[in-house]
Amino acid sequence: MSAPRWSVLVLHGPNLNLLGVREPEIYGHSTLAEIDLAIVHEGALRGATVTCFQSNHEGALIDRLHAARGVADGVVLNAGGLTHTSVALLDALRACALPTVECHLSNPAAREPFRRRSRVAPACLGSVSGFGAMSYTLAIQGLIAHLERRLHSGGDRETTS
Image 1 (cartoon, rainbow, N blue to C red):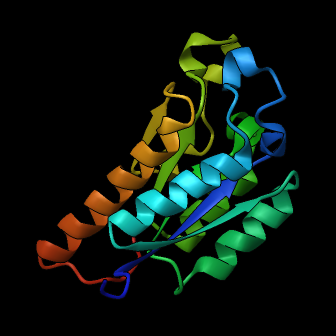
Image 2 (image 1 turned 135 degrees about the horizontal axis):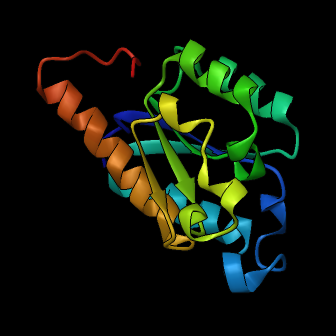
């Protein structure tokens, strides 16, 4: 097997460490550890090294984004509840300029009105939501397809969105 072509950072926001026990009727029965294994496997199948990180703290997520500059080729982000409130996370995504796919287990558009607006969406290539744990593997697929298209269209590996 050849060396991975891509490096992908997956960020999980607040409360996602409780997956499998927190509101399984909404978020499913898969644990975060199970989801991370599937994400890493999907990335490997598509030529990517995937690093997963979860925090309940906005600043820790921002710090990981900053550290990914010049290291990661792209990001999959499930910001959890910060999706709807965090201008700071939006600013960090813009400042880091890494291609990012927003990801959600549930479909925010079908939930409470306050969940229907994403503050981070303007800094993202696209969004995958509503497919449970599979949302993450779909997001990885979309991000890597974007990276491959950019590479083959004459773009370089620089990480700009």
